[in-house]
Amino acid sequence: QVQLVESGGGVVQPGRSLRLSCAASGFIFGDYGMTWVRQAPGKGLEWVALISSDGRNTYYADSLKGRFTISRDNSKNTLYLQVNSLRAEDTALYYCAKRSLWNFDSWGQGTLVTVSS
Amino acid sequence: EIVVTQSPGTLSLSPGERATLSCRASQSLSSSYLAWYQQKPGQAPRLLIYGASNRATGIPDRFSGSGSGTDFTLTISRLEPEDFAVYYCQQYGRSPSWTFGQGTKVEIK
Image (tube, rainbow over all chains, first blue to last red; front, side, top):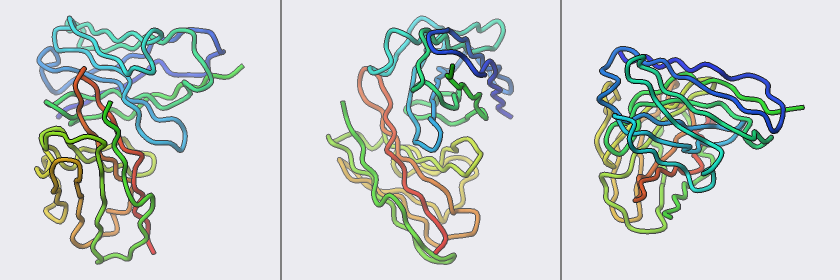
C-alpha cells in the first residue's frame, strides 16, 4: 500500500533554512505528481506546492512564492521541500501527499516545523 | 483566485443523525475539481469524495457528495461515532493551484 513518510522537521530559529523530505513507497513514485500541504497549529489546511511526476514543472501558492522550493529525486523515491528565511508563521505540520488528477489521494503523517528563537 | 467558503463552522449532532455540510466557491468550477477530506484529531487528512460526487476507495456509502457550479454539499446520512471530525472541501484552480475551505467541525451534541 502507499506509504509516505515525512522527515526533517524540528525547531528552527527565524531566518534559518530547512529541508523537508518525504520518502515514498508502495507505488511507482515517478508516475505521480506530488505535493506539500501545511497546517498551522489548530488551523486549516494550506496548499504549499506541487511538482509534476518528472520534476520539470513546479507550482506554488501565490502567497508563498520565493522562499519555498519543491523538488524530487525519482531514483530515491523522495520528495523535498526547501524552506528559506523561516518565519514564525511557517510553524506548521507539513504533509506530503500524492496527486490524483485534481486532488490528493494519499497523505503522510506530517513533520512538524516550529520556528522559534 | 477562487475562494471556497464552508458552512457551518461547527455542526453539533448526535450519532444516527444526518449531517449536511456546505462548500461554496466564489466562481463556478467544474465538478471534477471539487473534493472533500476528513481529518480526525492527530491524523492526516483522508480523501472522501472526488469529482464532487465520487467516493474514494474504502469510503462507506453513508458519505455522499453533490452539487455543481458554485454550491457543493457533503452529506453523511447517519452519523457513526467515528464520523465526528473536521471536514474540508478543496478545489482545483487554474495556474494550477489548490485551495481548501476553512473546514467544518462535526461534533457530538
